Image 1 (cartoon, rainbow over the protein chains, first blue to last red):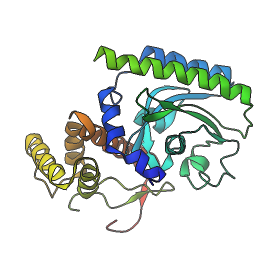
Image 2 (cartoon, chains in turn blue, red):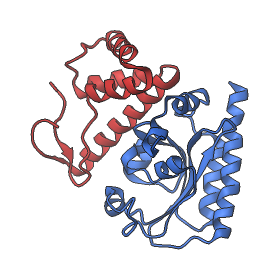
Image 3 (cartoon, each protein chain N blue to C red):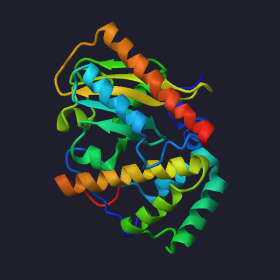
Length: 169
Length: 101
């Protein structure tokens, strides 16, 4: 049985990320539109497509990020909410990061004011979990199932776009 | 690690990646032998001496590694993000701590 960190570090998953060209510095226009749409639909300041690498997460597209995270285009993996969605293969929802047992210890909660989060795993046709489509806010917030459905639809769109790279490459 | 800043970022407790980190992460993805061979080759092609890299030199090697095909390139990208995060946060917040990691 593999634990969550084994999933994140799985060389086959990393090879899939490489095959899809997901570490490129270029921002895909469709993914960019998708994160903007996600943030707008859920009325939250930040929308991201993240790719969870072995020891960091990369922001393949981002909307609303400022400061060091926008400049670095990623964070160490131990500060990644999205890694939890990749590990479990399920949506990961945090209504209040200051009280959530899996994330409350992360410095980005206190120092970067990440307070609420909803992320849908991006799963390829080969079954690999790449990262998430997610939204982030600076105030505690509940997420309705209907809102998660909106994110699921946008995540599906993001995966289709990402999979198209396989055909292009 | 000679030349590597030993401190962690104030508040975030983030240390910069080291050569040993790079070798560990590469070995997990490629196996120890291939990892060591790739690391030595990348250092040589970057014009630096493995085992004694400054942070600037490590950054150059990591950037070269990120251009590799397959999982090695992903590991390189991962290290590059960790290093970039460290540098941005260290510049903004300062560092603290004692020698060594």
